[in-house]
Image (tube, rainbow, N blue to C red):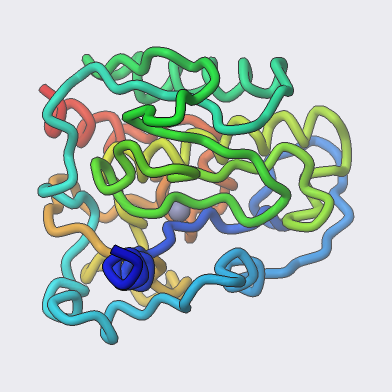
Length: 248
Ligand SMILES: [Zn+2]
């Protein structure tokens, strides 16, 4: 059992959210920047094996396909969500509201629950920590996985530009939640796609999908090359079109 767990752990990729920076953080105020770039993405994997799809048997052959991981789509439209640890009711509400107003409002998917996680809780299990936000897989790969999604509410260690003001911090909480819930619904990073244009130089991160339903989308909430950080938590037209296609 222990060995099996180790193997599973070693093959679980992380799906990170890129940190905010001066260029892409949407705000009317100047932001003091501590641009940590991709370093923070690496940092968040501290303690975990670094993820390289080419080192994982079977992964290399699909690494050049992307967007949505079809096999990880939920076969239900009602997806339970719970919190592992945070008692910050206001930020918990912000996350719920942002996800409800984006993915849920534009599809038939309904996220329900949103209370504290029971020991054997199924669905999306969110923990809050001051580290790089991420999910431990795409779609149903995190169903019932403890700490399957990690969100950040404080940003003292990771993505300090988010602490410039309370308004900006709240904006980071919301837009990151929308991005990570995209992963939880089965969306891979947009820049992982094989048709990513040369001007997007962000490296692929996490497992790629295997289904492309819309043209490459610079405005996607899942695209590190979007000049607007996580598209300010607003789904692009292609995000919505894809959502309607995969959860009809
Ligand atoms: Zn991500």
